[in-house]
Image (cartoon, rainbow, N blue to C red):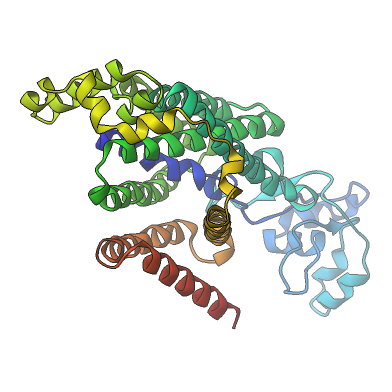
Length: 406
């Protein structure tokens, strides 16, 4: 069960970081338009090299590179004069790219940027699409966490796998940007449902002494997914096919998720001890412990889970997280830690293009760094403790971020 729960985590990285590739911004410039009233230059235009045509059509920016969002209102033939200087172009009239853009397809063949022209004045729409996806992740964390306590971890996982497959595939066939954003938001919802309930189901089946190891294995699944994403994105440069490729496996996860055994702890708390015993016997058979499984009964289960049964009689709300001074301290601390680590991680991982290194190589480096980091983390957690590991990791991350400033 742990293995089957870990496999879908391979593909979670693909969706979390997908827009690095599906929304990659290629080099671009305005479409070149030779004005019709320059008919006496027709022969000259036909014989021009591409570089010369761009020189008379597109102004240079301060870095002496072609402007990405402006072009000359009229073709500046005088710039073909060897004595002409680029500084004079500042005084020439320019206009936006009213006829569209030309894109360099050497790195990204086909992205949502090139399909819907999300550049220049529309550049912020790229960030909006990613923000809506993360908004879905935020809403899904609250929504599916509460629903899982009511309907069970297994039921929510089954639903989220299906939702992930359907919305991911629908996003691949989106006819316009608005539809794409809607399906990405719904995908974010499903991502949270899978993450929250996969972790819950693992923790509630795994003994306390090996939870750190199992948690690290799940983390390695996500890390391996980053390598898979880099390879798949390199092999499939078309954003629609890439979106489709990373979404289809969730149909397989949906089919085998029906074989999962519901959390015995949740069943007991929900007043369903008979189903809990049945599930425990099934797990015992899978683990080759048939004799131990046959000895299980509702009475034995209740006697060994008195703490869970007593907690089931008490209802809890979100206000319990801040009811006492100790809980307020813990809740505030954990929330701040999650905010800071997520802010730093996603700020880097979701903007790989700005590293100015080959984006596929950068994705591989991000994944490679995770392997020794997680290995060291599990060692310190097991042999030193969670508090020290958490504190040391936060201090180290903070120092590295500050070092980058200088």
